[in-house]
Image (cartoon, rainbow, N blue to C red; front, top):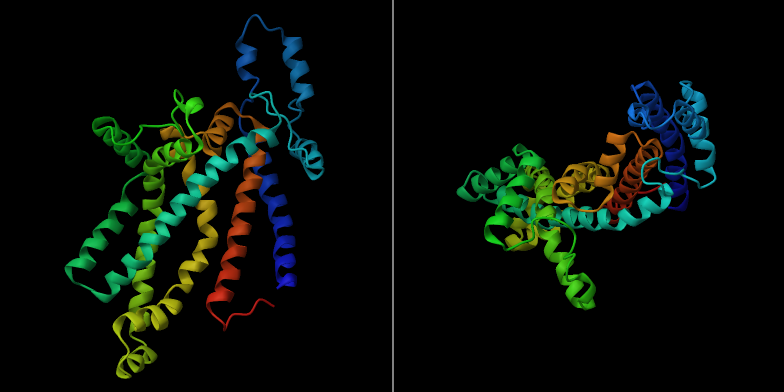
Length: 323
């Protein structure tokens, strides 16, 4: 197990190098930089702008040189200084990371908690009204754009007043709330963005679970279990679920990175102060240190997600060994 974990973590190093180099090359090749607005300001001298370019190493279009100026401090734990926020990148990401993990973790839990039973129901009652209703929910989740769904949820919140229309907590009353009231208030603000982000994953998992369960239920060992007189519940949960869920665990590795990327738009629309809004602002303003650090985080999330998926597969299916 330890050898497997170390090997997978070491394999992430060349992946991070390649992805960050390509990202830096795209940033260098794209026109303009964050100093473009300063050049248009007549009150700022050209000498000052050139001094800023030299300080941030933006005066060269050599990709290897620009990449070296970023990667060498990064190897020593220094992710740089934000051009626009005027703060260390590591502290900016640290402030937002917990908020994003709260949102994406809740959305992932929402997707799995509902997707597995819904997929099993659709397979057991195949081609009946239950299957068609679940199929409609799945089709809705796959079809609707996340931005449009977010706007619908904000409209729903504004019309009914049941949920807040944005933010992570009540800015006015937050300082006078007790710890329990703050916890409840945060959960209250979390509901709508969690539903938006979780519904997209839910639709995908339901379809996957349904198809895998249908195939599993047609196997000989399932018919044998039924012939022995085992109840339907026992056959489904003890014999069919363990085999049918393996493909879902496999795609779990991609879920973390996908959710983080999907959270970008959802956080922006709901005003959720997570990494999504930070990355979006960095891309708009060409804040290269934040963009590079965000790419590293996405790759790490992908690697960690796949690592967790491999370990879970080994736990669920004893035929799989991590050697």
